Image 1: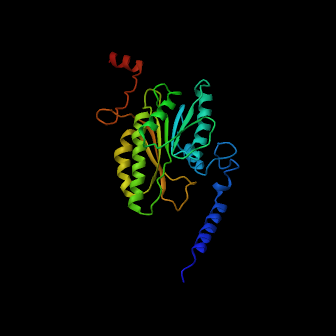
Image 2: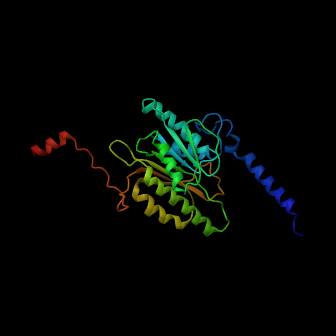
Image 3: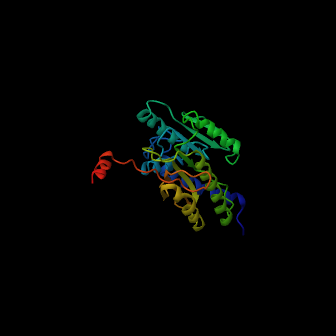
Length: 266
């Protein structure tokens, strides 16, 4: 006998509630625990993921961050706190900010400019760049974060392609706005959510590794173990030649004057 639909829903709801009750990250959202540095309350459980990544990698430096797929604001909240701290320490008190983008409405957050719209729309991307110009005159960003996720269809091939489309769009945008490595500046950072699949390894090799000094794959502890999501953490953006699409060559190191004099005397 087939179980009633209401019984199936009730069973599913009970499993979800039990999982939520046992999840330490859900329990600590309202207490500011788990070392988030995000204040007393996080907008979303996802904020723990970015907080963990930021402790492991030199992310969120500089004054301008773009957060793609931002609603309800967990990542923006963590990033804004880090940017305020950076501004006080290294930018003479000049404020920085996060420009957050999402199709869904998002409540205001201190230090966050919200752009509501479809990121695939070029006019929305232009709004993001205009927002960045309030902090970097050239409209550049120090970090681009993408926690974007397409609605899952349950069809593996389709879901992997949707994931690839999103990381491709975020990477293309990052090439436009990220500050490249120059002099003492280490180069911008890019964080991309993706769903693990062998087909995406080629994207990492051809579209990410040539343009960054380091690309790491990470699955934060706050990411549910049953989920196939992971993150690419890309550090030290090298820049891209707009004509050829190739990575820009790394700047030549500045020669030590004493070394030059020594070489001339030999």
